[in-house]
Length: 376
Ligand SMILES: Cc1ncc(COP(=O)(O)O)c(C=O)c1O
Image 1 (spheres, rainbow, N blue to C red):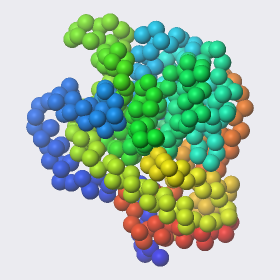
Image 2 (image 1 turned 135 degrees about the vertical axis):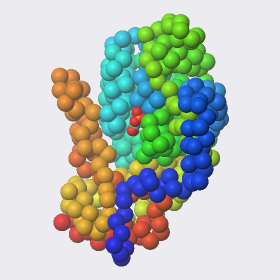
Image 3 (image 1 turned 90 degrees about the horizontal axis):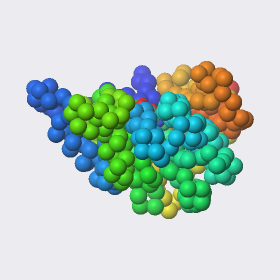
Image 4 (image 1 turned 60 degrees about the vertical axis):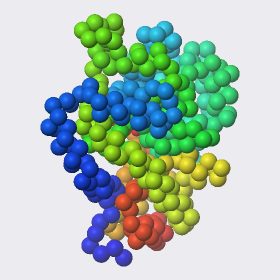
């Protein structure tokens, strides 16, 4: 029994404490340097992160939503996409993935997931491809790589661009390559709760496409490649020196922390044996780091009962996400077709604590609390 101490879903204060005193020293140095944007520290982060992901280019930006939007906007100004083109997207994702597509005048075409992985289902994807489809915006949801040979073949056969939404999966590896380097371009988020989290908002694009990289850099700089000369109606989005400094400190520890997440997930998968819920599928044995377990998510038909039971035992849980993008009020006039698998997932999904500062005793306590639940 854990006495008097609640298990938080995610304790960012305690997680960041692990990076002291380096974090505070860096913050102080930057605050005294006078250089807050467009400096050497964000340049260094771009080099570090491109090297880590395994791409030639990294453009650091203000957040992950901007990263998604600027990839799509760049393809539009480059003439690779046209307004009203269809972008295939998993129906089961965070709203920002849809938002980025709609905001660029493109059409999100939602595809049902495989409920055992929560990621896009290849056979459902094939059914949604039309002559207007131009790209797949592939989300590696909860940290799990979503690419497969089947999906690769569909993309090649139908000449579709592969854009990755790697917001939740930084560090995942598929066939020896990192997610974020598997397609033509990728968006990353360093929102504070992410496996690689800043102390505020931050994001990036990675790509091997030099023209795309230069266009995104210009679009994020109001639309100009040169100072005070604007070729496009861009926007203003950049990662500041403080966030870049924080991420430079944290990046070298990311793989170790993702391996620890995998150990916790392995224990959960092995030891949670309640008949009242369904566990997520284990990663393929030959792809051990294809999942970075940003979130460990169960399917529980009697979700409210389990939330109440765990809460009484001092264990915080979270729902990712309560309403799927296609049912959001903003899309009330849009007919996305039937998406029953996505809707069931959103009714039953429940995330339990999984983070790099969970103690062995806490993991054991969580497992026992779930296994002792009688479903009521
Ligand atoms: C799948 C996914 N895509 C995009 C985003 C957007 O990233 P940001 O919050 O940095 O704008 C998030 C953030 O939570 C996300 O989870």
